[in-house]
Image: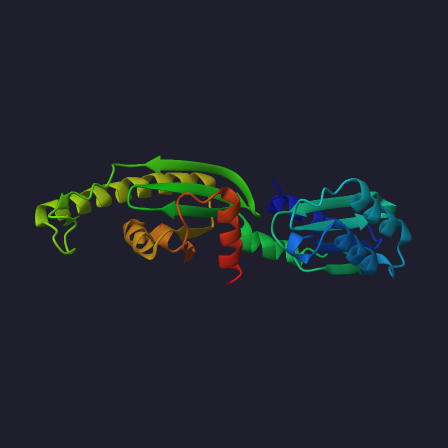
Length: 249
């Protein structure tokens, strides 16, 4: 897993020779592998460091699998220095030659997407995800007591709905609240253990709002967004929604 300490080694590297820093967006929405290769060649065709250009092109020809959303490459051929970092989150195309590696885009990604906790929640259970730079690190799930909506005269017994009984409504609310408290207990342990820095919560507006009321203030302060999402969504759909939410879509 790529971390701040990994980036620090690249950031601190210095040899006196110029370093090529290249970021290439390889999202499928921007084209196929050939389209990305063409953009890559246009980016490196005019650089004077031919050995670095050859090393970079060789990496994309023989090593990169084109499965990620982007990739960052740092090369200093005279010093035998080369690092390629495939990424599951997008970056803008960028190339720079300098005495130090250009790591600002990577630092921005770590700020936005490192150790992110995602919670999908409903009245009965939750799914917890730990993402780092767009990749799933770990996930857990919780299923509480079934929320039974007892029928009374053909209508829900949840209090406040037409035809509902007060006793039935109280039972429903108590079950939901008990589930929410247990979900929060599990979520706090999971998120603290993973040392998440940012939290997003998915579900219906009602379920998300109800769940947030039970979160401790220390966790509420880490919530950076919410989104609509079904509990049955797959991991790829969750991550797509996370990217969309973080990017302000």
